[in-house]
Length: 422
Image (cartoon, rainbow, N blue to C red; front, top):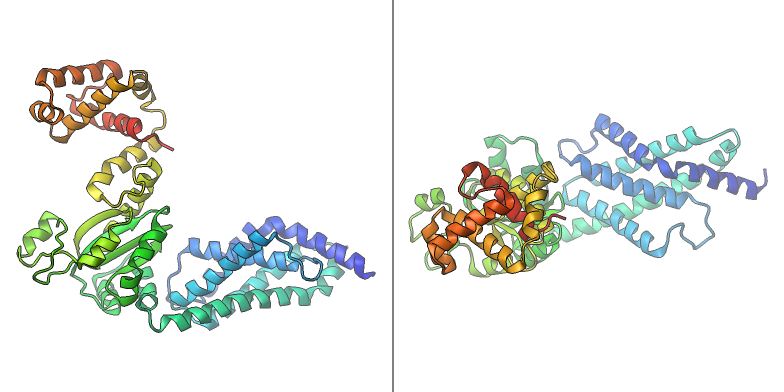
């Protein structure tokens, strides 16, 4: 068969599997779970799927019979794909996975890919498949080499950086389905911390995650703070210092404050605190123990995402968890019941700006403590003015700030008026 015809048939075969990447990923996951090449090291399935998709995309790109020196992808896309493969190698090194296991995974990719090509092959393309078997193996070897180089570079960088040795223990702390007290103690020992120490917890959503990681980099490397990416957010925590004379004094939860003598609870290192809290994030101070850090992280990640989506976060620094909670709840409630507050919101939006602002400020202030007197003082107006505005709000929206059953719905209305849901 002429070489040109074989090349054409080969490209036809490669084209036929371009849309099968998702299927290849599913088959890879099935094979992976059956073989458990990573042993006891837990790797999130979403991580496995993302890296597997990148590998199969890169492999198919390498299979095309493109002119020598040319890539089947535009330069920018090829560069992004190369970075993803390098991230794959670095991440597996950080997770403490052996290079042998990584190589075995690449062999598994070859098996799944070859099986897919054989399944798509027709009598017309069978000879092209056989003729290009070495091309397939060469593509796998080339991708495997990229991953191995990144893996070894990361291992070399690990030796003087506390982040590397901590990473797989943090993966387990934040991602394991369940952890016993003994397992928490084991993780604490591996991290070199007291399991029952008091920690401040910060979580930055996807838009600010890299900033928080960068701000804390010196402390992460030194092992005086710990952080990890979870669901595109960056979760960090560090111990609250109890050395006498420290000037910083973050607000403790009542339970922790009661447990520490006033002269002992002095806050964390001033420089570290100021560095971390210059970044927009959700802050939950004074959590006792890494078990508490783990327990609160999922909720803080959801809150950070909701607050970022609302536009409230901006770049103005941290938001206390208790301040972020109503925003997150209102956002979540709106997505659960879309359109549920459209009518009162629309009615409020039809008011003149100045009138609408006065009503929003009055209801918000009244909700702070439920006192007409305090609201009048805060807004510098007469108590009758406050009462009239609350009644006006009810007349406009059909929801009364004086009726407890309406409070949650009013919270949703105020949320949407202040921060339109994206």
